[in-house]
Length: 167
Image (cartoon, rainbow, N blue to C red; front, side, top):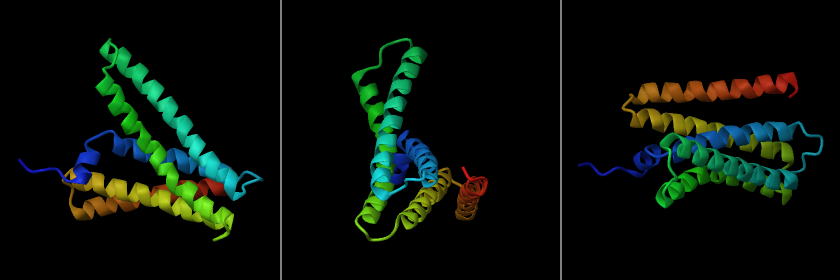
């Protein structure tokens, strides 16, 4: 039996889906923060992290409740532990934009640059996740790359439309 590499283990758990989900939600949060009239770096640092914490708590609550109803039993300690660990992937994705805005707060670059870097990072997460998921599903390198590019372009189009509408 072939030993699974780290990507296969990651993509065979719910952590990968939670990371993608977290990237999308943090992206949406940052877009909203960009249009806030008081979008200085430090509030965005804490806002991004605490938005992720709130999302994780809601995710854990809904997952435990949903699985309890589905299985008609209390979840085992192991099930709850796995569910919490998988959901923490949402917080892990928030560390990067928070760090980017912290560097902005410390004067390395301005807040607008921090937004651009964060958007690029989150689009990269979507690109890499899409590519790896397709490769692990035995798609060709070409098809995986094409799909990842299309997903990333769609992400950029959504951001451009959002900007053009002023939301």
